[in-house]
Length: 50
Image (cartoon, rainbow, N blue to C red):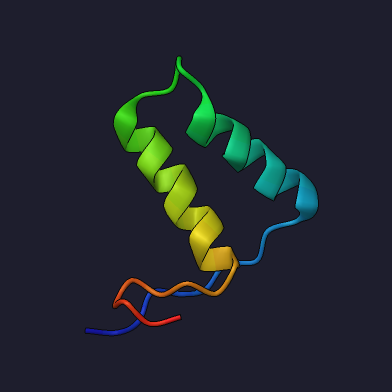
């Protein structure tokens, strides 16, 4: 399976995704996706390696 593309976020985008992932009004699935995008931008991989 090909690796997921690594994304690059601006400081503002990263901050906004953090807010979304911590908001009580945000659904669980959206929180998970926001956090996954942030982790990807910080170099984390989905296979347990970083």
